Amino acid sequence: MAEARRRPVSVTLAYAAVRVADSKPTASGILLGLALAKPQIGGPIALWMLFSRRWRPLAVASVVVAAMAAVYLIRVDANPLGIAAGYLGILRDLYGAPAFVGRTSIRRWTHALAGDGQLGDLLWVAGAGLLLLVPCGAAIAESTHRESRAAAAVPALFCLWSLLAWFHLGNNLVLISPAFAFLLLLDDPATRRQ
Image (cartoon, one colour):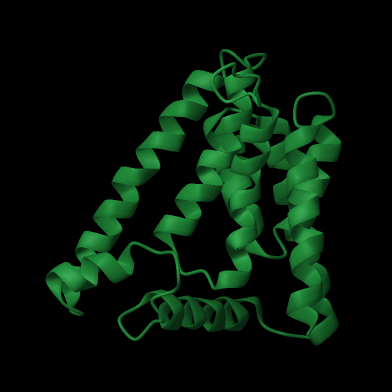
């Protein structure tokens, strides 16, 4: 139940971080840091900021995440190494050999081609890495042309990459919405209603 309530908040915070990344970088970093409470939602936006060289929002987001982690560790009186080991175990369960395949990940395809063993996982990681080149290249190019209308598509590319590369349940399909927003706002005569 709490998970279902956090998702719309994280999505809203992540998209707001994109919207104000250039005009209000500190506020953008705070928004992104809060969105990273759900890393599968905020993570693609953090990658966009990294590869498009938006250093201030990324640095502020890192401080926010560190502060939230510190508050959590103090509140539950936990050992940070124990929490990190537990989180790595969760990631191994989600993304390792016994993982769920997810509804959008290319992992299902690589395992269909090569089987459920290590070769299937190797193809999955290689495919995800190759797919990452597309949004990274676009972000690097966009970092020198931030006023371009096409620049709005770059965060959407990172969100779409995340859906293809990692485990997501159907409820994370909200990551498609930046692509829809870009297409809706694009002033292209070929796609304009007649």
